[in-house]
Each structure stands twice: as structure tokens, then as C-alpha cells.
Amino acid sequence: AMYFMREKPSGFDGMLGRGWFANKAWRFNYEHEMLEMVSPPDIHDQEAISLHFRREATGKHSTHLPRINMVVEDDTLAVLFDTGAQAHLTPEAQKMLDKKELVASSFVNASTFEYWQKQHPEWLVLKEADLSFGMKADLMVVPKVTIGTKVLRNVEFVKREDSNFQVMSAHFMDQEIVGAIGANALSQLNTFVLDYKNEIL
Image (tube, helix red, strand yellow):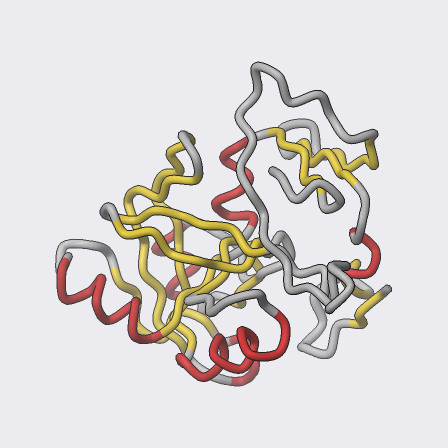
């Protein structure tokens, strides 16, 4: 399934969607910039992290959108595993983060964003840093995010209204999520296999 880009010109024609990845195993190699479909791997002596999907009554995946758990400050948070998440940074944010306008991103709902901000006023927050969808949204740099035993550093999360994830949770996920973890974080894993059929990372 190809989803065509409706935002301002990005240099890309579209995005490969959940139907493309469904029921297969894919190796993401960020270090060598490669994506390949692979046979489900032998996971002996390798870390395997559970993925979770919304199911039909028959047990089949109904939406092919994986949920994964991440840990921030000892809190386990359910999020969408979203390799296509992106943000459009303002010129000021580009300069502060030393990045281009269109970047991979992660997202978190407003409630969690504001909780983090209250608990950790020292964490970097860029006001109105993201211009996606014609809106201005704040961005926070979270120093440490853990997935399984892997520690990801300085992950940028863009603030999104709670309702965005409440609607998504109700219609597409197996339980409520508070955000999405994107390639700005996942690329720090360098190489991983995303196995939709066997529901493991």
C-alpha cells in the first residue's frame, strides 16, 4: 500500500504503509542504509522484544500497526512502532539541533510531555519547533529511552494532543498508546529485524 504525501513538497512521492510490511519479516539496517525482506530469524542468543497488534475475532492482525513498550525514567509506556514518523522543523529548531527541515521524529501525547517537563525542567524543550500539518508544536529532547536492554540517547519527541492517540488507540491499536517511537530513536539500534508474523523485534 502506497500512501501519497499530502504535506508540502518533501522530495518523496509517498510512504510504504502497513499493508506493505504486514505478515513478513524485515531487516532494517540504518548503518548501511538497507531494507530487505528476510526469513524469520533464529532468535537464539539474540534479544527478542514483543510486538503487539490489534486482532480480529479469528486472531489475525486487523491493522498491522505494531505496539511496543519503551521505558523512560522507570515508567513503561506503550507506543506505536513508527519507522515513518517525521517532523518539519522551523529554521530556529534546525539550527539548535543541527538538522535539516524534514527529519525522522518520535511523538508523545500532551499529558506525558507536560509531565516530563514538570518532573525534569532541565530537559531541553524547543517551543513551536515543529510545523507539520500547518500547526506549531513543541519538541523535547529526552536524554534516555530504553527498549528491552537497549539504551537510546537524546531522543526528540514532538508534542501531540492527547486526542490524536486516543482516537488511534480506539480504532487501530490493541490497547491505549501515549505516542510513537520513530526512526530518530530506532536508528540508534543500527540493525534489527521487525518480524510481523511472529510479533517480535
